[in-house]
Length: 204
Image (cartoon, rainbow, N blue to C red; front, top):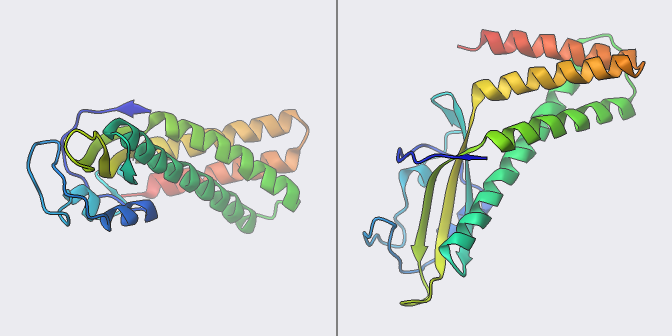
């Protein structure tokens, strides 16, 4: 995962963990030294569009931790888990759509193997490319405790990279399947790659 020093406030998705954080009532300070009310949070935490400016946004949250560093690590892990889950779901939907849109006969077992392998490839690449854009946390637990509350991390993934990675993964899986003499899997993966590429090119 890459990291960025960007200070832009961006719209994001709030997770279940993040919602839990919103309920915490810790008195706190921002990193800037300001003293917001317990209900005040940055725009990038409160606004929830899924994508904007060619990027997908993921906010991970942690309600409390023994230190800011530990809390940020937990919040970041939460955001990364969202990316992985979405990548696997997305790849599964691609394979299922290709199966419905073609006359290629593939067993359910082989279909599951295909979307599992593709999900591995896609999620690994996206996790490696995720960029940390913003971090927010508040101090709590009394002076000098070092504890942190309401910790949030914003990660982004480039949408063009997402599409390119899907296509490359499908093409690689198709080639591997043909080498292993599983032509029906190869045909389905290649059909899915062509179909997905057409849709990606048609995006505004």
